[in-house]
Image 1 (cartoon, rainbow, N blue to C red):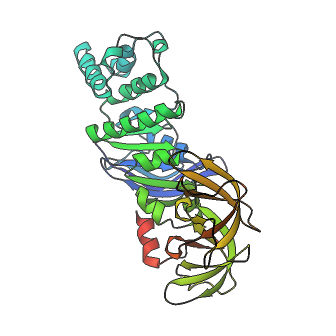
Image 2: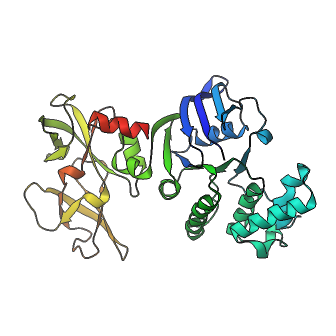
Length: 374
């Protein structure tokens, strides 16, 4: 096993800067997930760690050794790609042993390593098959097995489940989590799917335009996002945002926000640094909005554009006057609201988030510092 350290790591292609400088430590035996939108630099960063991309600036350490100029084969890493990249004319066993054969391992050593990996992945019965006789999930297990046989200090995964259907992705997430518990090896995983990140990671690194927005456990990022970008990226469905301005504030950790549709709501937030009248946005997650057919003191009136009944839950898409996007509300399937109804919404102050005009979360300074430290 090994830890991975990035110190002011930079990557550019000519004048195009992809990663302007990242500092990050991945602990020994940790499962860390890089997540972010397409083009944020997460795969490029992974390829820099693997040695498939040259580092433009800064330093990279694996197991305490500076490896900027060390070739990929000498870094003690193994990488699993989105594409399975299996040799069609070779059996599963031959595919898994190919790298060992190139490295000069003996036949008994290769056989023992393949058997061990196959047992871990529960594919012993597939060893004599060729790739064309395998399902997508089985092919991905073989690709992972090819990495396991090398006994690397660090596993790197570049969106390994994106070619699988939804049911297989769920199954493979469970298997990857089990694999990490068994091997206890450092794993770095890239995905654009925040559900994968939330279910697999010890810590998540949220990237945006080549920069780290926040590092933390899944629950830290979910409950204590440091800015609007993280708040909107982590969570499914994503957090609702309503534009407005600061109507009043007090020293007790409360703010009054006048929403764009005209209603005023209370938010538990530290808005002391903002002037009354400043542009802000209120955020609230779908499961925290209370929706009723009957008005109540302080409720906000909206129009149900669509009610999605999924059996165990119902999603209401509710439009507010002046708001660009409809709010998504997760509610009990027994809720009587239907498409076309008037909904009266209540936003519990303790469940609301306040973001300033620059997108920063308005909260206690120590909470932000803790969240950034991860």
